[in-house]
Amino acid sequence: MQTKALLKTLFDYKAWANDELYQLLGTMSEATQSRERHDAIRILNHVYVVDQIFQANVQGKPHSFTGLNTPETPEWSALRDSVAATDRWYIEYVRELDEAKVADIIDFTFVDGKPGRMSRGEMLLHVVTHGNYHRGAAGRILFQAGLQLPRDTMTVFLHSAPQATA
Image 1 (cartoon, rainbow, N blue to C red):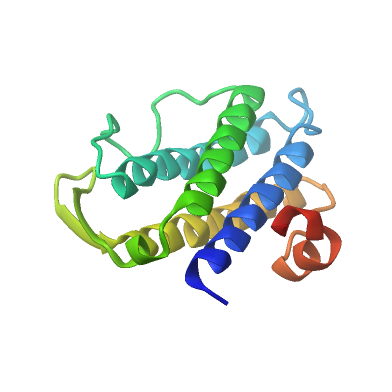
Image 2 (cartoon, rainbow, N blue to C red):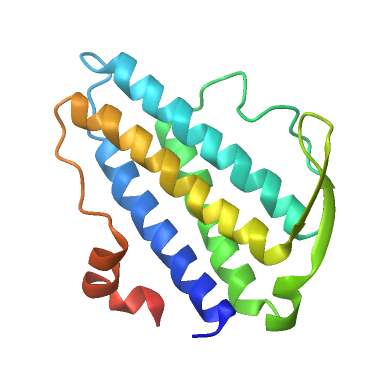
C-alpha cells in the first residue's frame, strides 16, 4: 500500500472515530455530568488546536496559537463542527498530496518558541496518533461517567465503514 493511500485511510478513520465520540459526548447531561463533559471537551479542544497548528505546519504557514489549548472552553457543538471541518480538510489534503511530497522536510516553530523539523509524513502521522491518544483519554472520562463507548477501533472502521475508504 502506498504511503498516500495509508494516510488517506488513517484520516478517514480519524474523522469517523471523531464523529462517533462527538455524538456520544453530545448525549452527556450538562446538569448532572457537567464536570466530565467539560473535561472531555477540554481534551478534545486540545486535539483540535494541535490539528490546526499542524495544518499550518504541513503547508509551511504560520499559525496564531501561543499554547496547546485555548483559554476558553468552546461549546460542544461549535467544537464538533470545527473538528469535522478540519477532518475534511485533512482528508482532502492527503487526497491531493503528491506522494513525493510526503518525505519533504519542513522547518517550523513549536508554540514554546523552539525550532521544529519534521517531514510532512511525520507531521501527518503525528496528527493521527495524537488524536487517537487523546480520544482515548476523553473516552475514559465518558466511560467513567457511565456511558457505553462506541467501538471505534481501526478494525471496526475497516469492516463496518468501507465506504469511508473508497
